Amino acid sequence: MTKEEFEKLPQSLLDRIYLGDRTLGSIYDSRAGLIAKTLELPWRNNQRSVSCIPEGEYLVTKEKPIPKDDPNTDVDESGGRIYRPYAHFRLHDVKSRSGILIHSGVIPAHSQGCILVGSRFKDYDSETPSLAESGVKLKFMTDTMPSKFRLLIEAKSGFAYK
Image 1 (cartoon, rainbow, N blue to C red):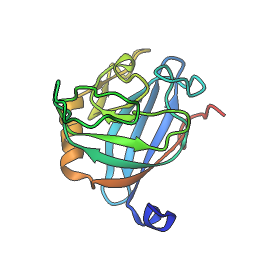
Image 2 (tube, rainbow, N blue to C red; image 1 turned 120 degrees about the vertical axis):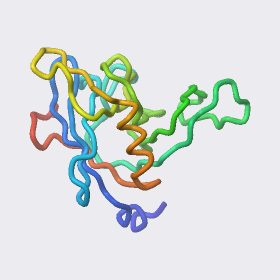
Image 3 (cartoon, rainbow, N blue to C red; image 1 turned 90 degrees about the vertical axis):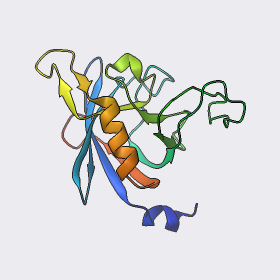
């Protein structure tokens, strides 16, 4: 994809807030407003499976469900075939990382370095907020969002790790 083609894609924003043991966020679309709440691992210098990914702008593509034990399932960027019985999104060209997805889950441990989405935070007033209605929100996103878009990740409302 050329730079010009990339820049013509619709753009969404993931606005992050970094906490000690997790990263909270919100995905916004310029046309539709708030799309989803997000939950990720904390910033730990972009270490695979223990850190959220760096801020930046990424190409995101929609992917079909990955059947269990289907030999025809494509090997993903990380060299594996991870069973995922639902549609999801993949982020491309993440520095020093591969296999970064937007998928369902409710606590940071479910992310393994990916971005989890949900309709809202639950236990927001506790020290360990989690996501609610993750599967429902992911289904909504895969049904309504474009098959390719740009995702700008930054900490507009919270402190940055830099």
